[in-house]
Length: 251
Image (tube, rainbow, N blue to C red; front, top):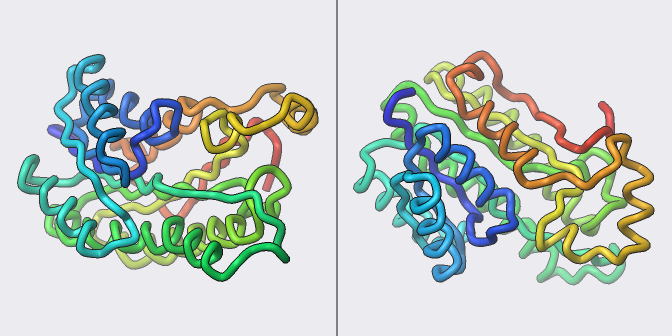
């Protein structure tokens, strides 16, 4: 795994899992292709990772729901680095909408970003991984996929993140013979802008009562699990999901 290159989607927020993963992999010596739908945010994130960690980064605007955007971003990454060793499908959105209030357009948008986006980026990255005969794919699911929500996000989010688990296992079966692994990480409630940052103090207190370790997760907690699945040590782990939820849910 020398001269490693990882592509990470959804890297625009400095309080997000994507950014924390970029910092962690940069510290482990990876070069990084960083993608986000907001160009200014991902360019700033890439600059911060390069400055703080000394890593080579390529920051690109990319809408993961648009196949032409995805193809261009993966092509630019290959042109810059010549290879892709790991793909972290982190881009995702959520909405705390009750099931009888979910519009068709909101349902479609959640699935487009959270499921179709993973499919499109994975499909674009697979040819180079197959040619290399090695690769790591890590998809972000959620504890909501397993417990049916009840934390943050509606039925559409839980359904989409459950679909991610099924997609992960199917891809793992298909690509294993090419030396590629595909796994998922299922975070609990992580203190980011789109989840923990929107909690009232009362809601936060009630949620903490359900978490045995007694705190919300940090983006770095999830980044550590992702880094392991991207590493050479995880070469015999595929089709699995790692729960990072502080004991909120046990399988």
